[in-house]
Length: 118
Image 1: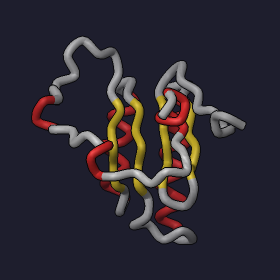
Image 2: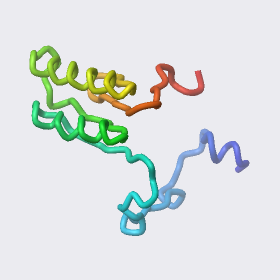
Image 3: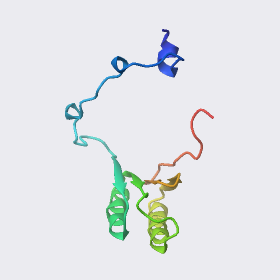
Image 4: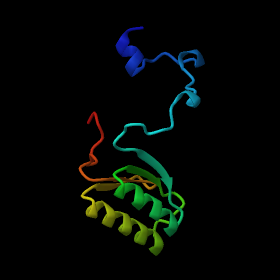
């Protein structure tokens, strides 16, 4: 099997022996000297937006799961409007990915609107 076939895949079926289990205990949880962190969040109500706003104001990226919010609820619209305002205030960016995620970035980081490889 050639290198490109390994990277891109081929018509052959994969076996469990070809995958490597990653032990998360070997990964350091501290940010160390990183200038920025990426946070994962779930938004189920107004209170959850506070931690997200704080993280973006601190210069971090947040990927928020919004599946617990009802799509046409006024609370949902209010939360998303608040997060838009935060992105504007810090000169960051915000996009909704599908119906289930919002990505908010701090100053100087833009989110591409097109998928790579297209």
